[in-house]
Image (cartoon, rainbow, N blue to C red):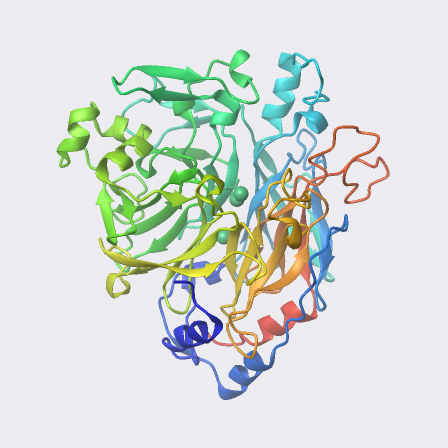
Length: 556
Ligand code: FEO
Ligand code: CA
Ligand code: CA
Ligand code: CA
């Protein structure tokens, strides 16, 4: 049952309203996730938290990035901007992650940005709406491949303005053409180093301060390999047809990729399984082993967690999948699971075909698990389930997972619906989540462009995709309050707080995506002279964010 407001407040009360726990490794990087120590708020701080007012926006279909009172934004970087003499910022930003170069200075650091996919209409001048369909060239596909992956850019805040340090030696692109080694002993489809990363949706950060970028809808660019009941394989075609020019195996994609901010070196973590990874959220145990949560954003797919057997390893350990009905984590362990041994030839094949292995074990199908965050106060794990239209779930929900005794390496848990999407709660299709330093939960929505603002569709009342906050304290605790409204066709993605909590980085992905005529785009945001919509990353600051931050002058 979803929580109502009263229950939400009492649920918060369980941990004691005066206790604020902040994870040491994440506070240094600006995001909260891992509860490791209790810090009491003073009565005065608590009163300020309770008195804080969030004045929300009404739903809007205006073609602009609208912000609630107390918030301002500035453009940090947009598609096509030069980051160095040889590279430009890629298309469709999603996950963002900021790591300061020096922990003592939260205003100077490296920003990682995922580039999820490249709309060929804008990036390669390929009209995918043409009738009869046009054929695309290798040159066009190369442009698309360059515009996906990720960017590392050094950014600095001076006099309240965030700026990219152009040509900083750290600035670089990882693209669909970058060679990347596999962190695994066995080759995959004959290779131990593969070409490129793509479909980079959300991600995460490691306790050792590296970026994690997650390969989600890889099947859209190189297709997939499907197996029938006799275990016979068929290669399916992709939507974007890159395989017509580059015959890369689909098995080389669908992984969690780790990127070192300092030198850009990347590796793919096979032990975390292959599926449409939305994100990867890490928790570091006391003995330095890590637990990694990740959802498979596809209808009726699953929620996974990896528990390492060695400190700081994303290779040695066991991958589990959730049976949310019985509250059990089921091991994808070829050696000890006869049902897996009968079907697959070894553990590598189990990881490559994780979805099939999960189903054989009895994993629970979920309604598109997307982002995952760990509540910094209670340690509960929140998972957005965006929707499952064929099952009649149009608006999605947020799932709450409570590990047994609060132990992240537990093999049992309790799952319940924390908040359901829909008219009553004022949001639909939850996607990204982020906790601020006061423990308020921020959330973005992802209604698809072809359904938003369409008469007769269930998404009409919600208008444009938005950013919401669910306050933790005060009279509005547990309410869903709209804090930003996206430009037309866009989705707001990748919310990430700077280490001092004073900036919220946010991506504006795919404005004007439904455009079929460049002379008449459905969005013109950010209103450049050329009139072409451009996906971008913005920095949200302002009085409200300052107030949230000032409430947290506590020692950690
Ligand atoms: Fe790329 Fe699941 O959103
Ligand atoms: Ca997403
Ligand atoms: Ca997140
Ligand atoms: Ca999504």
